[in-house]
Amino acid sequence: MVENVVYPAYFDADRSRSEGRRVPTDLAVEEPTVDEIAKAVQQVGYDAVIEREKTYSREYEPRGAVVVRGTEDTAKNDLVQAIAAYIGILRE
Image (cartoon, rainbow, N blue to C red; front, side, top):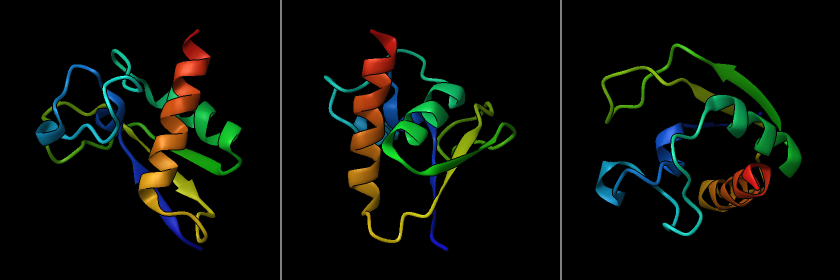
């Protein structure tokens, strides 16, 4: 089974691309949480496991990570873009 790890920094509007943001600024949000990311992953149709003690390699404080399971047929970039869209919808 293919697993992708997704970090909050990928969606953080306060970060630049070189600091780890992977989505365009119009899809980025302020201070994304692993709980929001996990909900968005489930809305996209995949299983999500939250790992709260994980730290993204470009950060010093642990904000956690979400392990996305069952993504054999999806590129990571496409997955991240879909998650970002759902986080925006959840925040409205």
